[in-house]
Image 1 (cartoon, rainbow, N blue to C red):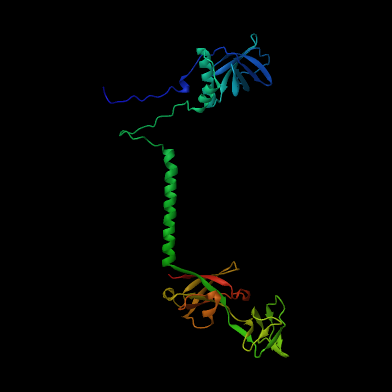
Image 2: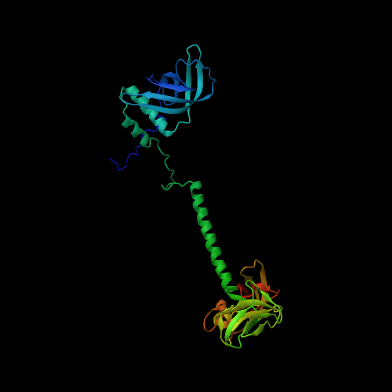
Length: 347
């Protein structure tokens, strides 16, 4: 005997075709109930139908199947095939049957043919199992199954999309490393004027809450009956001391910027990063709180040994380099001390 094994496939529902059989059942539509003349998995005939129906009309019927210990109601769609007015009989063909409905009808008809008792457990078993055979996969000449092209396309598209995204990420990294240098360790700066106390005492400030500007020689405070005046038409950038505070000699009271001063961008970078930059190199500037993108050029590159070394907006390493970028257009004075992002165009 050879080693070849038979490929057994269960009979499919489509192969189970029965003639219509008389069954003790009822069916109804449009609120009326009628006796069932005969039933199969393909259709049904009803008795004593006096209502006129059109051939081809689709009806929603409810099929009532009484059994010995229980009964079952199935809602079905059926198309009118014929109506015999003299016999008051209507023939209907089921449409749109679900796989479960086909299986249940076949089981009921087969049981009535065999004279068997229909049990609820049998119907539940029929409804739970898969009664339809699946299409066998096609095979190539070497015996391997052929995968449908429609199933391959989503996978191919996903792999292609991932590949394109990875390539774009790599190219973007190469571009940023070779052609541009980006940093957020920058801020808008201007020449600061600090008004300091020349003696010890209690400060009486004349700067109102929310005040942003002062005029030249305008009184900004008083200490020990001595007036403190503004040295220029200035913009107030920071108030260090307020009324009622005790101030010692040399302590800053207020920081000002001349109204006609031209702000610039101060950028701190590491020494190895500074080697990428040259005087006159172009840069793009984005200041926090401003939607406008500014342009400018590198004006100076020097070691930070002055006030920027302790500026919290420009905090960096102990060996930081300060790069001054001169903007092509004047930066509004209200943006002074705002953080900024600078993108240098290396090539």
